[in-house]
Image (cartoon, rainbow, N blue to C red; front, side):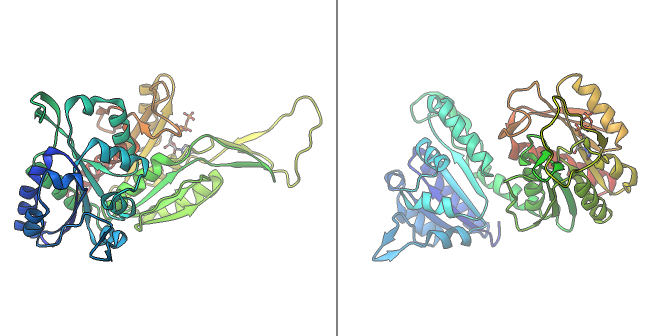
Length: 401
Ligand code: CTP
């Protein structure tokens, strides 16, 4: 943790008693620590203790001594913001964008990764509103440090105990190690739909939003990979500075861009929902309504994944998707073989919460060595981490790392 800048936001929960120990451990390991507290947090642990241990003044209010606390600069100063303990109330406010204290103002303006270590009693932990708020925060890219099972302030035993300081530090260390896991590597990711024009005002398209592909691009970039995101027409976009976005419209444009970039990549993830067919002729004028029926002649588009599978070099890891609604496993295994991918990520449309335009996904990953790994329903950000973990394993195997 040497030289790492950690900004800790403490909200009102009895688990705040663990934070002085956490701060001491971080300082001992060479980290720089700044602390923000909510007013109620100051009733559980003293700002004097935390200020002394962190060697920095503890901030509670938006203004102090006629000076405005610069919440934007605090978020920019930090390598990581950690909200610990994150109370049920603070989690609800974070998930809904409320901004009625300094901790929330800093959270909303933070450009650094945010970790959340929840703490509450078991019945609150299981309430659907809390669980929905945590899922929503995960879709914003925030990372959850799982609460644990154990003795609670109520005297009951159950879920909701804040992770121990050592576990919190382990999570932060893993993040900093991961941050460089793909340094020096390059990737292309296709994402979103394609539109195949019929005339100047109409197209054939699909409901893909690109969320899954964008989440993969952002996860790769957060680990130091240089990513070229080839993005079909969608209102969404990627924000990480390690990502160069190439906007395309048609399957042909996506093909050309992917093929020209592929030779210099270590990784290629084909997450786009590419049109399988495109009109033979595009009318230069708007097609007018005439007969009762209208026939459209379509021709196959080029299969980008299959083409890249054909020219793939030994060191490159190629990942494809399969979106199916029946005989899922058979189709996924066929695609793995036919397209010469290293991994096929299967989504079944029969699983609720999986597929287009949702914030969650449920996947299975099929590998060339015949293994299948099934995952539970997770946020697309967490699913992206699972996929990237497999990619890293694949790179290590292929390159003897
Ligand atoms: N894909 C591609 N280029 C295409 C069609 C598909 O790169 N022209 C990629 C997708 O991005 C995905 C994988 O191939 O990674 C499988 O796409 P999918 O639409 O599920 O399968 P298809 O091969 O198109 O077959 P089918 O539609 O019959 O299931």
